[in-house]
Length: 551
Image (cartoon, rainbow, N blue to C red):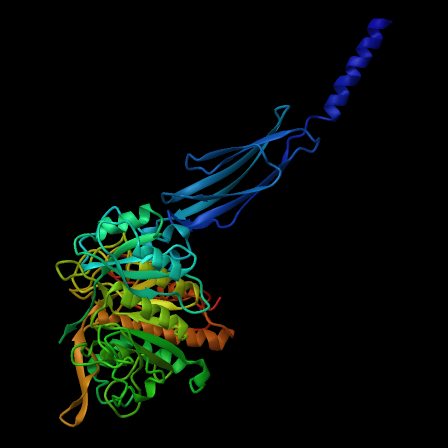
């Protein structure tokens, strides 16, 4: 009898276990993005696990690239991860209870090669792209700089007190503050000071200031140079050259599709950081309302050129915004829908001068900044600063980017396989040059940080001095200096169109994304180092049914 009862109880126990088996934990898994770029963009992986019977749970998160996190807190969490290499990766979240029951969830993440796309459209939003000061190499690469000067980023706090402390710094050479560079009013950002010291002692002084905590960053005062090789509206010089150049980028169609072209409130402001703009030239009088500022080594009060600063900025400005359809000279890319802000930085053109001009562009409400210049090396060509950018300028460009200002910069005119700085910054759109047939110009710098190309050969523009034997003066020139304002002008056109269609301005990242996504592919399929994403197309960028440009 006892055996029968025991057997019945055992059978009942087995039946109870069979009816109520140990249940595995329930799991959830999601990722912020299923497609990212290697080494630049990160994913956010959100997970959760819970045991239906309340048992303890342990879990693990495997990113599929050899990285595994063993987690003790599994109820709800988020982890960030960046993939170093392109490929397809399976993210696996595994949860187990203390009785061995296990469950898992999986998702696939597609990681793209970050060297095969438009750098400006992806990099600036990533913390990995933000460069910090490096003092291990002085100067960076073989970049030219002003002897006896250094730029120092001050710690946060009272600037006047910090400057007083600098006077008593225990360094190897005397110091004198020449100029303070403040962030734009009402905007956050670091304060820099330009110091004078004994030539040859710049690096030693910089390291001493960093070591004693009186500087957050220190660098040379780099020397920049301009990038030019001098050489159907009814404007007389809208000839076969200019017409072919503008038709290559679809500009005539873009003009025809512009929304509300007579609404001046939609017009954008383009800052020309250059040698000055001759705003009394007949083709520029209507394009300049704000006379700008002179930050150069000269004693001017506004952005007007001199014989020593030359015509470069006037040519650049007229490519962007020469008065169009006025029976005079040349046509401008923006066809009377943008204004110019002349910010004169040459002669001089050093880091401290350029940083002030960029800050002024933000303060004055510019939408686009044109930078047809680069840091020079000791050979007179554009220095390669991919790994060691000019931190003072990088701070200024980052601040402009975060305040909605699009910066466009020239790649360089020396046929090198790298993009000059500031074009190599993630906060600028880097522009190379093609001829009117869409072929890469022989002088145009390329590389993995090239974003777009535009016409840059035989570019006609207004010049300075403005008079040529009693007639308005014009010239033609070659260079990425002159392809850059084409893209700056297209950016201004796109921002105006976006504002009209969507009621707000696009972000700098959206501008880069649109211009790169709608570019006409040249060279190897997709991104390549000679053409970047391709030739900028104004007509495509102004097409308001394009889902990428007008999401």
